[in-house]
Image (cartoon, rainbow, N blue to C red; front, top):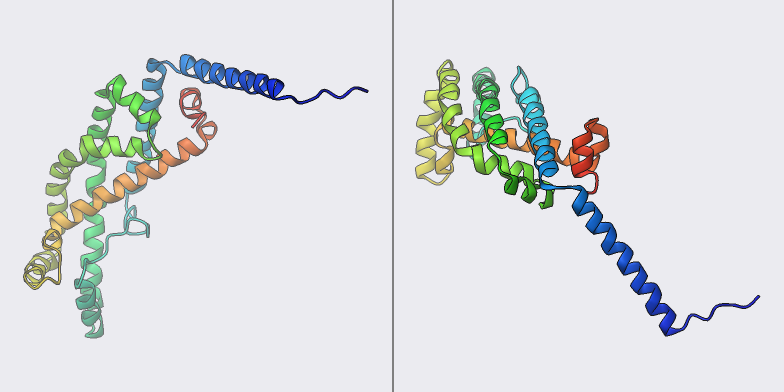
Length: 233
């Protein structure tokens, strides 16, 4: 049996053929995934991420029982809390920590309308950027569009909840002094602002985790549009 000799010319032919197949495949994929499909898929991913995050966090224990997002006392106040515990003031520390986390849980449901408004207002150009972006481009989009207005929405809800615990006012007084000595970051010197920021951090963390799940296994979502848009990513 005569063996075919693998000459430089034949090698070049094989490489050219492989390149054509690859280019045609990419072109076909790009053609199949038009901008309208991309936008629909991204909107579906955004809505799914928003629903999942709000459902997980906006309920009793959503923050308090989740070590990934549980809001602790900040900075040097952790040391002060340890001293209070040693002095038999465990309940007072627990009350403040519980209050902070309850405040975040109360605030999160207010995020859903703003998140969905951002989805509906999303442009096709935004959608294409998200599809071509990294593993957290959906989350980055949400943060850029909604973090500031969500902070304004969360703050009065958080304030109303933390005012129920008298330690909140004492926290602000102690933290303000601690901040002047560099023991507490200035942005952590007000309990309401601290909890609002941490609540937003937790919300976007959960949206990011949902996004990564969709990108890693779009088939598992059961959504045809998500399979179409993220199946190749």
